[in-house]
Image 1 (spheres, rainbow, N blue to C red):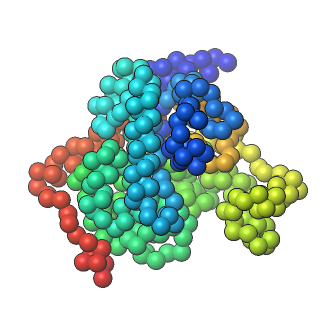
Image 2: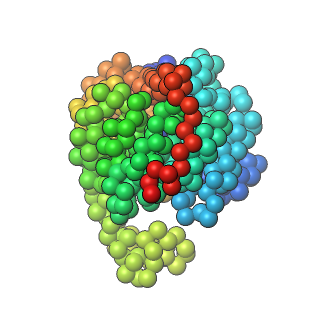
Image 3: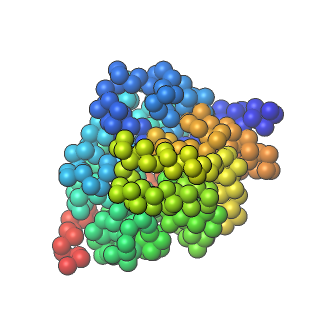
Length: 392
């Protein structure tokens, strides 16, 4: 257990910056933001992956709370604002544990105070409804990254899990990236098509992030990052934050999920249907064909590969807790990060390398985006371009 003790010691000094946690959406779905009904000051193991005791146990020092809303909501902008309000309520309710953070300096201050720096990321360009003014308002409310797409295309960018339409980024999509650079909002390339990744890297003047993505060479899923994109991160200065979602990290789980989805469709259900009737069909399939189980070593294999291709200065962690139904053994919830760090110690990763993975890289990339924004704002006014003016 020496490595686990060493991992906890390291995390006490260089805690985890996690790039993506869907607690706000889980709170919306389960209690409609009733924080009395689901008090994260106490263990919520039966209902959530995330609560304050387990965040402390896991050595988390900063968290990007996802303010995700589904793309098919009829009016995603007010729903996104409600998600932001949820984070603000959490900050007001738990000030001894959670510290509001908008800058890299705020993250360091929170670490020095022993609190968990709380930042926000909007998951999907649908949250701005094709409006650069809305983008600026989200930034003013504290959103510090935006994932350009979620599972479906937006009018100006292609998703990894939808049929190609734009071929990457449109002219308006490039304008969105430019305005994010001017603001200091990180461009998040998780969920986007590889063509969109490449176009965004061509368009951006600031480092990018992948808030929760793993390596496509290790697990061939379109949500993961191809090696040619990982190879571009050193020149860009960006950070790829490995995710833990089994169907993105374990090839056997990718194949199993495809078969399970096809089984649901064969029985007349959408593959994402979670009604009791659909889940009965799904459980019967799982009893007949057991689900493959990812482990800590599965995730570590991705990090080994990503380190080889992109370099240690360009890696981070984005677990996607409370945004996935299943997690790897040993990374069951937010208390599990020490198990991953212990595995990497056993593989020969140095404490210097691990401090970059857990804390330093993520803080650096936000600070670098702030530096770029400071320069751009001195020469560039806010963009009032519209999608109609650029893409028609």
